[in-house]
Length: 108
Image (tube, rainbow, N blue to C red):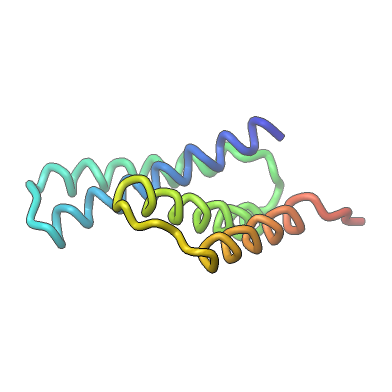
């Protein structure tokens, strides 16, 4: 479970960080090299996610979507200085519950 969590966190940081660098380039007029680095980081995100041991692509990416949402709320708080409100936290908690159901529900 620890390795699963670390891979999800690393993939999330790569996706959000890569997207953020492209955002800075395109939306805030920062240098093009930030966009290029962002593109490379996004490719790495796609590779990192494949290290999960779950057997199905769809299930891994569905669960990762919930983790991504939580990380995005935290990124907005830490990087964009946008304090999450109660509904952000409730939504993030619901997503984590969904991730838990997708990944660890007993299946036959």
